[in-house]
Image 1 (cartoon, rainbow, N blue to C red):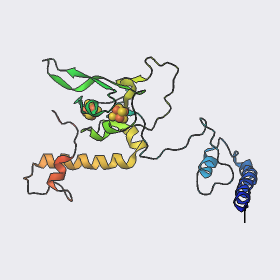
Image 2 (cartoon, helix red, strand yellow):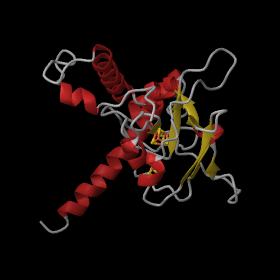
Image 3 (cartoon, rainbow, N blue to C red):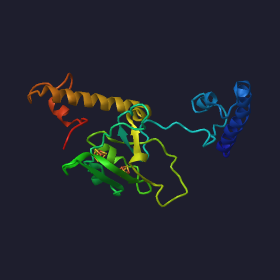
Length: 227
Ligand code: SF4
Ligand code: SF4
């Protein structure tokens, strides 16, 4: 019948309207429906009742593991009293080469004898130009640059605040393991396998590690490699 769809839609709206008040009463004695982590988790689940508005920025939706925003640089976990550990980045420059909008600048270190040092003195990313494509992270052979989950980067200064330097970009490995546990574990497995293959120095026809063919192991990135 003509108009049935409209009535159904209005019925759904009305149901949500009353369910919101019912949910308010349900959470009344448990800290309230809003600004309450427990109630927020229920509101974002299939058990949600009524309006599920999020009061950003006090309440924030969790992002999925594969979410990607501007990149950050991975370092070892820092020793006590320090903010970062040893850089994983070897300043090879691959990320800067593959970056489509060319928004990465790397200042490579120098050894006392003048030869290049495999770590950056500084590293800049213009986050206004970065398009969050993730190529830098995909191509980095050392797992040293990763896509962050931090999307709250707005600021009032448009001259320099959006050019992130090495200090701003560096975050410890434990941060990456926290925001992306599955990928971090898979990468760690790959590194261990590659390290094992390297240490054993097996022949081309021998197996590099259980379950991993030699030719695959050779492709895996490993930390500490020199160029
Ligand atoms: S590709 Fe990786 S190791 Fe090379 S400069 Fe970029 S972040 Fe550093
Ligand atoms: S995410 Fe893409 S655009 Fe941003 S720095 Fe990496 S390669 Fe460049």
